[in-house]
Length: 350
Image (cartoon, rainbow, N blue to C red):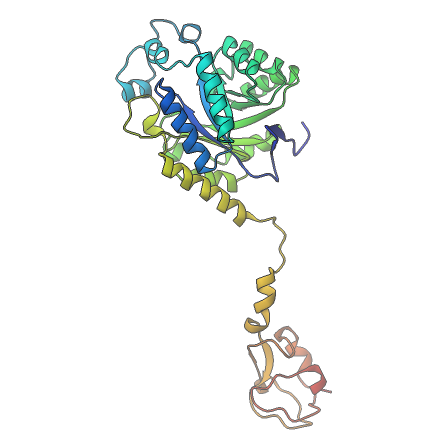
């Protein structure tokens, strides 16, 4: 892969040198209700996210009827059947069309994670501009093949994965001629701080020369900004209208106000990072003369007197010979009398 490779979603370039692409992860926090889903879109757009992402699946196609819930799902919902949990969170084709229409109205990109091939094809047919593949499907070759065949960007989450597994998944995506980006994440809801391993963002970038993001499952507001400072090109973060709502992901999500704080922190971090070129700013140039020092007379010096170290000192403002040259004037005679606290200039010495 060529270094500095980028992808593009809805006209926005994603990669090094571009602003971080921020995905507000609604996921299934709509609880199967379109009114909640529309409000999530409104909040994500108002917060300044580039995209909002939902999840598209058919419970019959992704889980057996007797599959138990994951531990975090059971803890957060009290439901033991993963099938029943997911069945209640499905959204229909008409629902997706309505949500896409609403995102266009709010000028935010609609994305959705497909969990089965049928859903993947549906999203493509509806014009969704990129596929987001979940960590659990990184080894789901048939789904990767289906997504890659659409030749639109694929954002691949890498929770639970080894570098070898990621390489295999990227090979499958590459065979379909699709562009790819990777998301570092930890599959734990919520993820404790000590598990986040944000330096893995750089590891993935160096290993695969692709845009790399951070899908944050912690409850912290500032960790995405730290990830951006470490080079993350994409940020994905769960959010909800209310953490007290029933559902598997609400407790590991930000509320709308926190989402806005997170995005503001990312954009401020990007400003602070700068371009890495070390030159004085215009303001620094303006104040330089006021805060840098010059060589000045420590006492009255007569004309023709030989300058010794105890006869000079170094004070603000800049205006005479700079202190770095002090050795060059020692032992030289003055051309004129110099009063105490006056700048010593090159023309003042022989």
